[in-house]
Every structure is written in structure tokens, then in C-alpha cells.
Image (cartoon, rainbow, N blue to C red; front, side):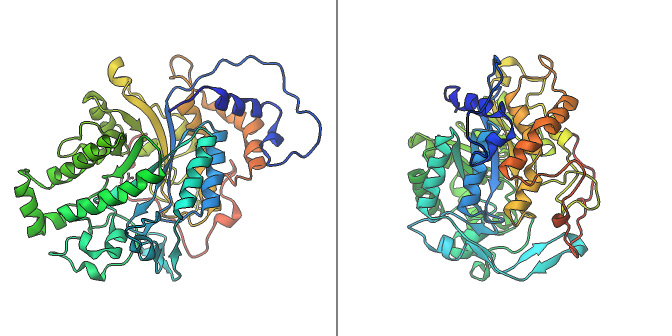
Length: 450
Ligand code: ACM
């Protein structure tokens, strides 16, 4: 994905005259002064990505364009746009206008967790136009960033089923009563795998390919509960017809279908690590999010892998144990936890390690209802992630958190300030982040190992 080094080089040059070079307009006239330096530098990984979930909370186009500038400033080169989920569908599909007419709005939103949760009783939603998405792609390309679109299937699909009830398991649930989901978590309402549904998604992906030139197209594949397929006579008939053993194989049949379908069109499928269950699709690239295991298994089986284990790269997780931290998801994952992320475990052979084509930070937005909230959760941790994505493997040159902290203090906070990024300050949450009446709580259970 990397092109010649002029783009990264320009970003490095921009760091030399001081933070004002990160403003949108110069404060002073006259030449910028840069010290004489010789820099020899190259990225460690070809795929240096950030996933932005615009489905749980919609981020209007301007916010996405701004994030492309922020990714470029951190020498990241992939924006993975999570365009569909249970709670919202954000890409217009000309053939199926109800996907956005019905699927892009939910009536209300859950805030907080467990017994502390409450409803925010106002609609939330929105969607891009096709031209908005083309503009995003072009703006990204001008910054050497590839936009990888994700249409999540067969789970995380309630917004699509609400728009087109025939996509659901109609023999076990009354899908006509479904609306875009107003809760968070794993949703039992998944797609059926009939020929008609497969054709529907081929038509959707045809329009995705018209807009997004990316070699990789993400089809999700994560967190698909199989209860409805187990209960559905139609799904059981389909499993028998296709000569499959069980529901896991039904999911992997679907993923293999789209792997082949995309390959026939000169594209490549990428999916979350659940796509390995029930047998992997031959051409699939795997995003390892449930820790490292999926990525290790995939690399050993000859798949390309993007490492994004949640314990290091999930920027929706709370940044500290501070009780004033804004409504958190899951366990505390500090700046240091992100900075100590090593994407290539030593147990891999050199050939297997070469399969790890990249790394990605994931920004799920259940608790982030504004660009300010996204900034707070993403920064400064994205700066630590960018260093992991770019710099050599520790052992050759050790990643030194103390040194990183000094560089943040001496220069990078000021750059983020100049960029207008409301990052989490070292002193703790910003006052506007505290929401009276919506206390946050860490998720129960033991945290996964760092
Ligand atoms: C995921 O976090 N469900 C990929």
C-alpha cells in the first residue's frame, strides 16, 4: 500500500519547524526555518490503519476528512470505515434505498452500562451520499491513504434487516418488527444465508466496488451468534443442501463465496478473525482482534494478517482507572499499553512473520457521540500506535516509553493542540468529558493479558 516516501517525508519535514506548521494557516509571514538534519527512515508495516466505526455513532463527512488529515500527520495509510452495523447503515445503495432511509436512523440510544444505564430519548443517525464517499476516497488518496470499506455480515446486521425484513431468519423471528438497534452488544438477529440474501449482498458490494477502489474490501464476519440458524428449518435445510456439517461451516461458506466473488473482480476479502471458524476462505486477509491467536493461526495457514489485538489497539477502552474517566468500555488500556504493542510474536518463523502485513487501531464508537469524544479516546494513544506501526521491531531498536513520553511533552502535544485535537491530557479527563448521571464502570471479569 505504501507509495514512494515523499508523503511520509513531507510529514517529517512538517515536524521540524515547530508546532505552528500543523495549523491550517500560517500565523506569521516569512520562511519557516528547519534545522539541517539527515533522516533515514522507513515504515515497518505496509498496512498502518485505523478503523473508524461510523455506524454506532455517525460521523459527518467533515469529521472523516479531518481524521484523514490526522492519520496522514501520523503517517498512517489506511482508513477502515465500518459503514454498517446493527445500529446504523451509512452507505447509500441506489438499488436498495431503504438501507439508508430506514437503516440509518435509530429512535434512541443507550448510555452507560448495567444498572447505571439510561436512555437518551432522541433520534440518532445520518448517512453519506455516494459523492461524499467518493470525496472521502479522493481526499484520502491525495494523502496516500487507502479507504477500506466494511459491510459487516452475516452478524451485526439488524439495521439492514430492519430495512429489508426478508434478509433475516423469518421462520424463527418476526423480522418485520425490527428497527435499527438501540442497544449495544452482540445481537441475535443475523442474516439468513438464502440465495436471495447472497444476491442482495452481491448487489450491495457491486455498488461498494463502484465507489471504493481499494484492493481490500472488508466483509466483517465477527460476532455472529448461530442460535437463529440452529432454530431455523430454512437454515438447516440450506446446511444440508450445501453439504455442510454445521452452522460454523454455513458462515464460512458465505465468506468463501464473497472471497471468490471479490477475487473474480480483482479485489481481496478481509474479515475479522472469526472468519477462520468453520474453515477459512483461501484468499482472505485476517484481522486478528480477539488477541493474537487468530492472527497466528492465519499466518501459519498462509493468510495475510493485520494485527489489531484488542488488549493493545482498541481505543474505545478506557485510558485509565481514573473514576472520572468518561463512560468507558471494558478495561483500562493506557498509553503505555498501546506503546508496548508488539505485532509479531516471536513464535512465528520468518516466513510466517512476513504474513503480518500490518497493524490497525480500532475505534468503536458506542460511547463516542461527537468528534470531541472521538478525539479524547483516540489521542494521544494513536500517536503511540503510529510509533508501533512505523518503527522497527524492539530488540533492533528498543521502543522506549520514557523517551516517547518526553517527545510527547516536548513537541507532540503542541502539534495536537495546533491541529485542534482534544486529546486526553496527562493530568486526566477534560472537564466536559464528565457526564453527570452517566457513571462509567469497567467491564466485569478479568482483563485479557497485556
Ligand atoms: C469486533 O470487535 N467485534 C471486531
